[in-house]
Image (cartoon, rainbow, N blue to C red; front, side, top):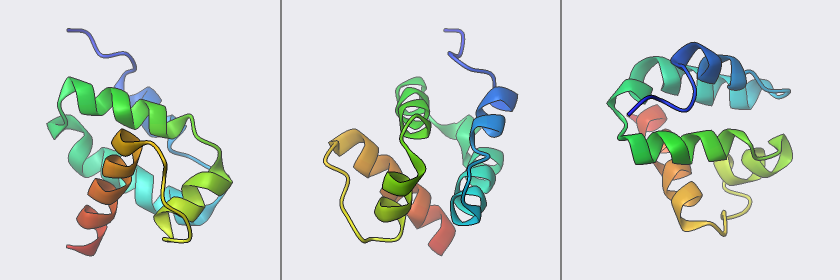
Length: 83
């Protein structure tokens, strides 16, 4: 199945207005994106469509994402950073 977005386009979409998000999302694409299933890649693409303030709140633990799939992706990204 052809990817919805190329890796380079996905990497570009990881460039956000907040440095805190850039340092989480960019390295995740570099190091882990290729290993994701097609379904998880689609979830990651949905995550990139979320506004920066919401992403920041979820990644910093100030709020919990109400969408279970997106919340699981946030946890996956954070787990990779903590290792």
